Image (cartoon, rainbow, N blue to C red):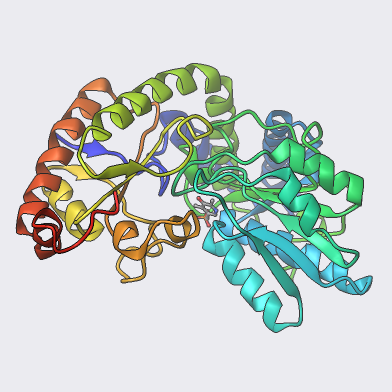
Length: 395
Ligand SMILES: *Cc1c(COP(=O)(O)O)cnc(C)c1O
């Protein structure tokens, strides 16, 4: 059996998303900046796509800028916040310790440029509070950036409450909603969000395309200089097929959101209940305030990497830590931030489901994982030390 359980890393494109690209590769391939008909047809299509994205985010079409994906949108949002802050002599940015590297690495760069960064501590359940944000805001704070939902442990942050605090304090608020978009209802106006990033390939759209919502009146800083595309804020000929496909995928996923969430959450909860029966294991992230498709466990006495290889042999695609950190020996920064000790964080497994997942797949995973964990523990010297009492169990 083949089981794809890594939908937080990327998703399979939907038929709708694939079909939406084709006309813009085969027939309407004009450059949207050109004045003749097939160029203008492409330009009109872009406006339609922008309107669809805006509809499901609760904003205006002109508040959507297309990007090459979530990382670019995150980078541009942070640079925008920093540039606006610097103009006013404000060089303090607030974020959390569990952000995606597209945020954390850009914050490191800004720190080298003289910005002061406060990374809020994250409690064991993986959810920060709006109070923490309020307490961290200073006179010189120019930007708050808090992810909507975490890519590793699936926890959902109180974005609307943080939005209220930022609005009250007059601080720009960005959220990396790459894991949330298409999976959780989002309304940027109601939630007082100034900037929001999303990425098509996390909701069955194509890779290499995303969007940044920016509240009108907030002047974007360019990452890419060149032509006047995207109101002069993001140069480069638009990825028309990708953008059309993203809009189609977003519409499809948003229209089916509730139905999908109910189905996927039921599978998730079955998976969580089953894996929790493995001795010396722990669920990472809040059991309730989490993405419908996210399951993340630590198993004591094993290495996540070996677990992944053995699951792959059984046809299961899963992840340990985030895709970017796998292959390195550093355990996940997210698991460390919620207080998992190094040796526990090393034995982590993330399974992320989608509406394409089935009950039979979940049953298959629930048979495979306990067997593989058991097998690895039997070979592990660390496990022997634990069982024979030379070391204390942490879980
Ligand atoms: C995947 C992801 C990104 C990066 O998006 P890309 O489109 O792959 O650049 C950023 N943030 C989060 C939370 C993600 O899950």
